[in-house]
Image (cartoon, rainbow, N blue to C red):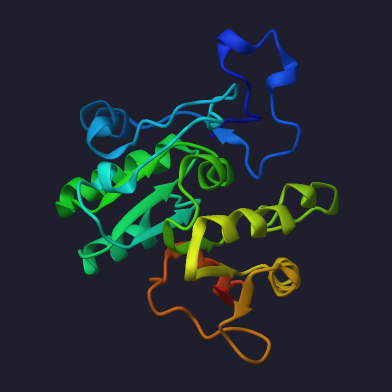
Length: 249
């Protein structure tokens, strides 16, 4: 599957000053299967929310304002998953917790298309998707205090030292998460990469506005997260699965 750094939208390529000044935590992948293309064409408007864009393809406009009540057609607690991949965790959660609104944020369209296929098969009505850079959506698109839980499960570890500046969970992300979460809301993290787990813990322990939801070195496994093939693969390689949880003060 082809990978390439994200580029500005065509109409704005001539103005580099409008492009991001901080590396994002992903490179975009292209190409979908015919079934994914078909699902996207048929059901995009049903599941994928229309987010006002900034200069980059997955960026969020500074004046974007999204109302979860309008998006879901009801008032309910909101859980947002950052980097939902193919949707395994959030699809299971949506199916088992119909009283909750779920928003999957992902930049890889193929993963979102697979999520759409399974959402249609399950008849899910409490799930929406956003094809944008998650920190920008949390910082600009959603109102402060509008999120009840924020999930970051198995983000790209960017294992090489020279790439670790791309890691999602840093002090800037902690501040964005603090803004998005309501008081009492929870940030849940999981990774199978030990040094990233340690970094996450150091970042969040130092982050203003958060309190640990666990004692000792690591949180117990979050029972709302199903065990995916990705997690199983990491465990089979001998990697410890690390969970963390932090409550917004």
